[in-house]
Length: 364
Image (cartoon, rainbow, N blue to C red; front, top):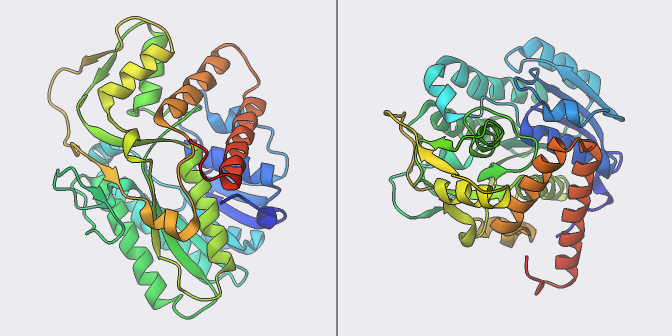
């Protein structure tokens, strides 16, 4: 699988462009020659990846709350997108405990608003809604979740994303069934990579602790997660959206997992130790004191369906993903021009995909 000229000149609307994954996606789409319109709330972090990647040379970006349906309808009409990639969300577990109402409003009703705005836009061919690996009913077993597994979620964030999946299923069957619009969802693992400064995420928390000369405090050091570099799921989203646009019927799955291979599932402590070894010596982590809000002990994804359907598969090992991540932050600390550095990482990833496509025996 390799990205093609499909995206050149394609009108794409992205929600959540000021977020970590959204900024990387918009940069990649710009590199591919797409005509991008984007909307999101203002970035909550300083530094901000979205700001560092400026100037946005061929994109129209707007600060807009997806809870405002009237404004969404105006923006959809003005941009006339062919493809919508919906990523805007309250994307963190711990803040969902602090503000569950905002989490459900944003993730559930915000998605309803996006789909309502899309319903009235005749140019749209594909809507891809990005949810989460945390949508599954997790009973704690060491079981890689597949797309057919039951939805669930105990914390407000996970439950809100499971609800998002149900919203999409309802709209697919109620409003888009038999029409020209393909609506699907994408579920990714725990994403790492350069440019994430969100609170309560392992890599940015580690980098902040390292800059302060302290070990990171880990709430659940033994929790297992499916770690992957940010470019891995983004490549899957692009391939899925392209396949949906080119499909002549509804034979494609309505949802796909994009997770790492089995060897890239690791504990939180393993990742902290690997980051520390890659970024210098010293004590890497300590146990955070006190009690903490509940989180799943083990979470793994089965991406066999995406591999079979799209020919997609992970191209970066966990070691490579961590190296690319620490290289990015090291370059930022050294004052490098991060737009050029990030484009170079995308280009290196594309080259790896092309080489792997030409010779499937090439190891990632």
